[in-house]
Image 1 (tube, helix red, strand yellow):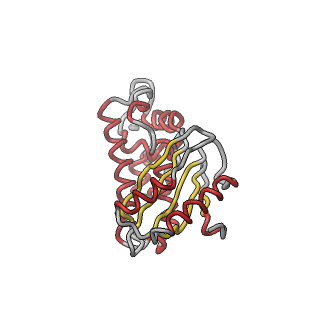
Image 2 (image 1 turned 45 degrees about the horizontal axis):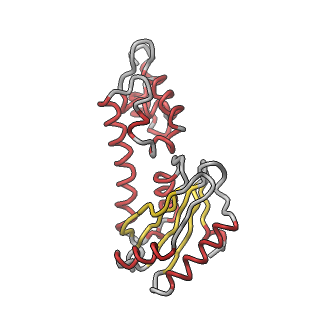
Length: 222
Protein backbone atom coordinates (compact mmCIF):
# COMPACT_ATOMS: atom_id res chain seq x y z
CA UNK A 1 0.00 0.00 0.00
CA UNK A 2 3.04 2.25 0.13
CA UNK A 3 2.48 3.28 -3.48
CA UNK A 4 -0.86 4.85 -2.53
CA UNK A 5 -1.13 8.47 -1.35
CA UNK A 6 -1.25 8.61 2.45
CA UNK A 7 -4.90 9.72 2.52
CA UNK A 8 -5.92 6.71 0.39
CA UNK A 9 -4.21 4.05 2.48
CA UNK A 10 -6.82 2.06 4.44
CA UNK A 11 -5.14 2.45 7.84
CA UNK A 12 -4.61 6.19 7.54
CA UNK A 13 -8.07 6.66 6.05
CA UNK A 14 -9.68 4.77 8.93
CA UNK A 15 -7.81 6.78 11.56
CA UNK A 16 -8.68 10.07 9.89
CA UNK A 17 -12.30 9.42 8.85
CA UNK A 18 -13.49 6.38 10.80
CA UNK A 19 -14.12 2.79 9.74
CA UNK A 20 -17.39 3.64 7.98
CA UNK A 21 -15.44 5.63 5.38
CA UNK A 22 -13.68 2.52 4.10
CA UNK A 23 -14.95 0.41 1.23
CA UNK A 24 -15.39 -3.29 1.96
CA UNK A 25 -12.11 -4.26 0.27
CA UNK A 26 -10.22 -1.51 2.12
CA UNK A 27 -11.59 -2.69 5.46
CA UNK A 28 -10.63 -6.30 4.80
CA UNK A 29 -7.18 -5.21 3.63
CA UNK A 30 -6.29 -4.13 7.17
CA UNK A 31 -6.16 -7.62 8.77
CA UNK A 32 -4.64 -9.05 5.57
CA UNK A 33 -1.90 -6.39 5.68
CA UNK A 34 -0.04 -7.50 2.53
CA UNK A 35 -0.87 -8.82 -0.90
CA UNK A 36 1.40 -10.89 -3.10
CA UNK A 37 3.62 -10.19 -6.09
CA UNK A 38 1.63 -8.42 -8.76
CA UNK A 39 -1.49 -8.06 -6.59
CA UNK A 40 -1.83 -5.37 -3.93
CA UNK A 41 -3.56 -6.06 -0.66
CA UNK A 42 -6.73 -4.09 -1.51
CA UNK A 43 -7.11 -5.97 -4.79
CA UNK A 44 -6.47 -9.22 -2.97
CA UNK A 45 -9.10 -8.31 -0.37
CA UNK A 46 -11.52 -7.72 -3.23
CA UNK A 47 -10.70 -11.20 -4.54
CA UNK A 48 -11.49 -12.70 -1.12
CA UNK A 49 -14.86 -10.95 -0.93
CA UNK A 50 -15.78 -11.99 -4.45
CA UNK A 51 -14.76 -15.58 -3.76
CA UNK A 52 -16.84 -15.74 -0.57
CA UNK A 53 -19.83 -13.64 -1.57
CA UNK A 54 -19.12 -10.50 0.44
CA UNK A 55 -18.78 -10.14 4.20
CA UNK A 56 -21.91 -12.20 4.89
CA UNK A 57 -20.45 -15.09 2.95
CA UNK A 58 -17.01 -14.63 4.46
CA UNK A 59 -18.41 -14.88 7.98
CA UNK A 60 -19.72 -18.36 7.19
CA UNK A 61 -17.02 -19.59 4.85
CA UNK A 62 -15.46 -22.85 6.04
CA UNK A 63 -11.67 -22.69 6.48
CA UNK A 64 -11.04 -25.08 3.59
CA UNK A 65 -12.81 -22.76 1.13
CA UNK A 66 -10.42 -19.93 2.02
CA UNK A 67 -7.58 -22.07 0.72
CA UNK A 68 -8.94 -21.44 -2.78
CA UNK A 69 -7.95 -17.77 -2.70
CA UNK A 70 -4.48 -17.07 -4.04
CA UNK A 71 -2.26 -15.38 -1.48
CA UNK A 72 -4.22 -16.55 1.57
CA UNK A 73 -1.65 -18.60 3.44
CA UNK A 74 -2.21 -20.24 6.84
CA UNK A 75 -1.38 -17.06 8.81
CA UNK A 76 -3.82 -14.86 6.87
CA UNK A 77 -6.56 -17.48 7.00
CA UNK A 78 -6.11 -17.81 10.76
CA UNK A 79 -6.37 -14.04 11.21
CA UNK A 80 -9.57 -13.84 9.16
CA UNK A 81 -11.15 -16.74 11.02
CA UNK A 82 -10.25 -15.11 14.34
CA UNK A 83 -11.79 -11.76 13.33
CA UNK A 84 -14.99 -13.47 12.17
CA UNK A 85 -15.30 -15.45 15.39
CA UNK A 86 -14.75 -12.30 17.47
CA UNK A 87 -17.66 -10.63 15.66
CA UNK A 88 -19.96 -13.55 16.45
CA UNK A 89 -18.86 -13.77 20.08
CA UNK A 90 -19.25 -10.04 20.63
CA UNK A 91 -22.88 -10.15 19.53
CA UNK A 92 -23.53 -13.35 21.49
CA UNK A 93 -22.11 -11.73 24.63
CA UNK A 94 -24.40 -8.73 24.22
CA UNK A 95 -27.44 -10.98 23.74
CA UNK A 96 -26.50 -13.00 26.82
CA UNK A 97 -26.34 -9.91 29.00
CA UNK A 98 -29.79 -8.46 28.34
CA UNK A 99 -33.22 -9.58 27.06
CA UNK A 100 -32.97 -10.14 23.31
CA UNK A 101 -35.88 -7.84 22.53
CA UNK A 102 -34.14 -4.92 24.19
CA UNK A 103 -32.42 -4.81 20.81
CA UNK A 104 -34.27 -6.71 18.04
CA UNK A 105 -31.89 -5.28 15.44
CA UNK A 106 -28.99 -6.93 17.28
CA UNK A 107 -30.78 -10.29 17.12
CA UNK A 108 -31.16 -9.88 13.36
CA UNK A 109 -27.50 -8.93 13.00
CA UNK A 110 -26.43 -11.94 15.03
CA UNK A 111 -28.50 -14.34 12.96
CA UNK A 112 -27.40 -12.73 9.71
CA UNK A 113 -23.78 -13.24 10.76
CA UNK A 114 -24.42 -16.90 11.49
CA UNK A 115 -26.79 -17.80 8.64
CA UNK A 116 -26.38 -15.20 5.92
CA UNK A 117 -23.60 -16.84 3.95
CA UNK A 118 -24.62 -20.48 4.17
CA UNK A 119 -24.96 -22.34 0.87
CA UNK A 120 -27.22 -24.93 2.50
CA UNK A 121 -30.54 -24.30 4.21
CA UNK A 122 -30.14 -24.41 7.99
CA UNK A 123 -32.79 -24.27 10.71
CA UNK A 124 -31.41 -22.80 13.92
CA UNK A 125 -32.84 -21.99 17.33
CA UNK A 126 -31.89 -19.27 19.79
CA UNK A 127 -32.58 -20.78 23.20
CA UNK A 128 -33.30 -18.13 25.83
CA UNK A 129 -33.61 -18.17 29.60
CA UNK A 130 -36.65 -17.01 31.54
CA UNK A 131 -35.47 -13.38 31.23
CA UNK A 132 -35.09 -13.85 27.45
CA UNK A 133 -31.30 -13.71 27.53
CA UNK A 134 -29.36 -15.87 25.13
CA UNK A 135 -28.37 -19.31 26.40
CA UNK A 136 -27.22 -20.78 23.13
CA UNK A 137 -27.65 -20.66 19.38
CA UNK A 138 -27.78 -24.14 17.87
CA UNK A 139 -28.05 -25.36 14.29
CA UNK A 140 -30.72 -28.03 14.63
CA UNK A 141 -31.53 -29.21 11.12
CA UNK A 142 -29.95 -29.09 7.68
CA UNK A 143 -31.47 -29.49 4.25
CA UNK A 144 -31.06 -28.75 0.58
CA UNK A 145 -31.60 -25.34 -0.95
CA UNK A 146 -35.31 -26.08 -1.26
CA UNK A 147 -36.25 -28.23 1.74
CA UNK A 148 -35.40 -28.80 5.37
CA UNK A 149 -36.85 -31.49 7.62
CA UNK A 150 -37.59 -30.05 11.05
CA UNK A 151 -38.71 -32.29 13.91
CA UNK A 152 -40.62 -30.40 16.64
CA UNK A 153 -39.92 -33.08 19.26
CA UNK A 154 -36.16 -32.45 18.89
CA UNK A 155 -36.62 -28.73 19.47
CA UNK A 156 -38.80 -29.43 22.53
CA UNK A 157 -36.27 -31.94 23.85
CA UNK A 158 -33.38 -29.50 23.52
CA UNK A 159 -35.36 -26.66 25.10
CA UNK A 160 -36.00 -28.84 28.14
CA UNK A 161 -32.34 -29.91 28.35
CA UNK A 162 -31.26 -26.26 28.41
CA UNK A 163 -34.09 -25.21 30.74
CA UNK A 164 -35.10 -22.59 28.19
CA UNK A 165 -37.99 -20.25 28.86
CA UNK A 166 -38.35 -19.04 25.28
CA UNK A 167 -36.91 -19.47 21.81
CA UNK A 168 -36.35 -17.53 18.63
CA UNK A 169 -36.57 -19.73 15.55
CA UNK A 170 -34.44 -18.93 12.52
CA UNK A 171 -33.60 -20.29 9.12
CA UNK A 172 -32.02 -19.07 5.92
CA UNK A 173 -33.11 -18.87 2.30
CA UNK A 174 -29.76 -19.26 0.52
CA UNK A 175 -31.18 -19.08 -2.98
CA UNK A 176 -33.40 -16.04 -2.76
CA UNK A 177 -35.40 -13.49 -0.79
CA UNK A 178 -36.18 -13.75 2.89
CA UNK A 179 -39.95 -13.71 2.32
CA UNK A 180 -41.58 -16.39 4.48
CA UNK A 181 -43.35 -19.18 2.61
CA UNK A 182 -46.64 -20.83 3.56
CA UNK A 183 -44.56 -23.81 4.68
CA UNK A 184 -42.55 -21.49 6.96
CA UNK A 185 -45.76 -20.16 8.50
CA UNK A 186 -47.15 -23.67 9.05
CA UNK A 187 -43.91 -24.86 10.62
CA UNK A 188 -43.86 -21.86 12.97
CA UNK A 189 -47.36 -22.59 14.24
CA UNK A 190 -46.53 -26.30 14.64
CA UNK A 191 -43.45 -25.50 16.73
CA UNK A 192 -45.30 -22.85 18.71
CA UNK A 193 -48.01 -25.37 19.63
CA UNK A 194 -45.48 -28.06 20.57
CA UNK A 195 -43.38 -25.73 22.72
CA UNK A 196 -46.43 -24.29 24.50
CA UNK A 197 -46.99 -27.75 25.98
CA UNK A 198 -43.77 -27.36 27.97
CA UNK A 199 -44.25 -23.64 28.74
CA UNK A 200 -41.65 -22.41 26.25
CA UNK A 201 -42.64 -19.32 24.26
CA UNK A 202 -41.80 -18.75 20.62
CA UNK A 203 -40.90 -15.07 20.52
CA UNK A 204 -40.08 -14.83 16.83
CA UNK A 205 -39.14 -16.68 13.68
CA UNK A 206 -36.50 -14.89 11.64
CA UNK A 207 -35.77 -15.67 8.01
CA UNK A 208 -32.37 -14.66 6.64
CA UNK A 209 -32.02 -14.14 2.90
CA UNK A 210 -29.37 -12.55 0.76
CA UNK A 211 -29.04 -9.07 2.21
CA UNK A 212 -32.47 -9.20 3.85
CA UNK A 213 -33.85 -10.36 7.19
CA UNK A 214 -37.56 -10.80 7.92
CA UNK A 215 -39.14 -11.11 11.38
CA UNK A 216 -42.42 -13.00 11.82
CA UNK A 217 -43.16 -10.96 14.96
CA UNK A 218 -42.78 -7.68 13.09
CA UNK A 219 -45.06 -9.01 10.34
CA UNK A 220 -47.71 -10.07 12.85
CA UNK A 221 -47.38 -13.72 11.81
CA UNK A 222 -47.01 -15.20 15.32
